Length: 407
Image 1 (cartoon, rainbow, N blue to C red):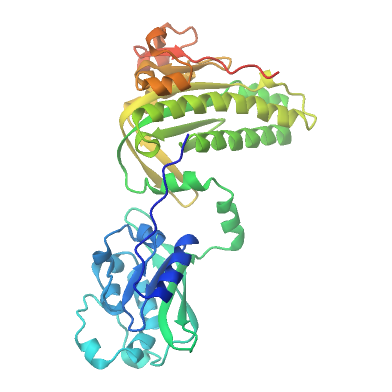
Image 2 (tube, rainbow, N blue to C red; image 1 turned 180 degrees about the vertical axis):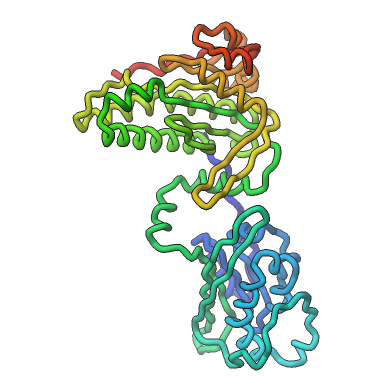
């Protein structure tokens, strides 16, 4: 699947020197902001705009003195009161020392969390300083962010501005773990920070007979298999433009949002391509583990798959102390689970409503002819459980072609 085009370069500061720095910060995708020598906010990076949840430059405080920008409602709501006090301790002495009294007198400040002036170190700002903020977003626990502030000088040594660069206050080992994930999928997940209704294709996949398989294999071998399989499945979902929902036991859920891939037809196509890719990945994961000496064949590792369409799934992030995942609510999610539970021996079933999302060009790319597909209801499937019949018995589904056997 083709990824959506990236964002356009941001509007840059008028100062050529600050514009060049802003462009480099943009290219490195850092959360950052730039101030001119008079402490006027002249630029905010796309990453910092995303953290603040605001794109409007006026609301961000463009063209305002730092004290006006930092005490408006947007900025104050993004940090705890203790963090605002910490910001004052770390910055206010330099700002007050460098800002003329007549400028300070003309500022319109609201909710300024200042500390007493006698507690401030009133002097010119150093070359580099740092402080921490507890960033907050409604519905989530505050997270600590480190800020490094750097004075920018020209060739003569004159100050031409200040850059604030923000980064997670995490150990390098934790950042290394985050960096191992699929960056584009993380970006899709980030765009779901605000829960809402979205049209999407739904995929459920589950490893058949995982219990007997886990008892047959040594624990270390079975763990290696599940790790290889999970990694491969997540890679397939990411390449197809989807978002992994959760890993439950030896299965996975995934969503392919129409808004992300371009249309309902493209979302349905992405889910169908992922279903084929997952079944191939299962065989490859088995071969990888077998190559290390495990008594395992490709036929021992099969994924049963169900696909369905949700026209208005309520989707969003769920963030706890131990995980970040995307979840969706809607009858179609439960129905998709029942469709998957009715599949056996590596079969995949797609609902009629999903297949009929396909436009002609996407159906052709999948080698499908929507006008010649034969459907059965879930209740008519040989392996449908009583629960599947009760929850999704009337849903029409078609069996997907199986991947070609490796030569």
